[in-house]
Image (cartoon, rainbow, N blue to C red; front, side):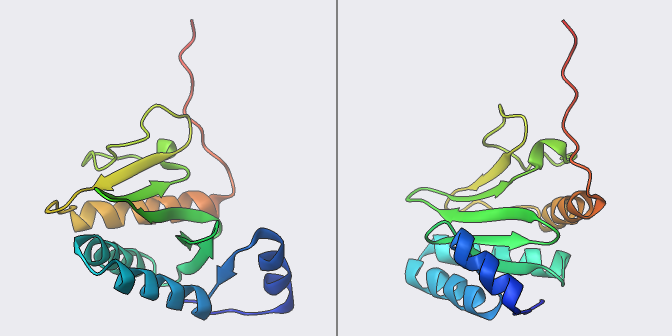
Amino acid sequence: MKYGWNFQNEKNMKKSGALQGQQASELISKRIAELGDWRGETLRRMRKLIQEADPDVVEEWKWMGTPVWSHDGIICTGESYKHAVKLTFLKGASLKDPARLFNSSLDGNARRAIDIHEGEEVDASAFKALIRQAVALNSSGKPKTPKKAKS
């Protein structure tokens, strides 16, 4: 994982309220520990899969307490709710999902999410493939939006 800290990063984080690198990683670890139940374990497992899929992923802490994983832009966020852990891919609508992991936020033009409920398992190799696709899309520098059907 990259833990870069420079003046420009610090300046940008102050503007956006985001923390990056070691401090963000510590806050994410703290969140996982605080959850202390299946949600913490699920978030820990998904974090590990993200790191395995992209060893250069950058962990961030944004929007007053949301874990974020980035590489040339946001890959996904990880939120915990009472009945689900939600991983939202900001450009998910542009990703191929043959394993049909996306099961939430399916109506938008950009985002797609995976809601994981207690006792559910996510196909690790399919999830890693989504992470790698998201990184490739971010690294391409070209936002790919789905083409709308002509009326």
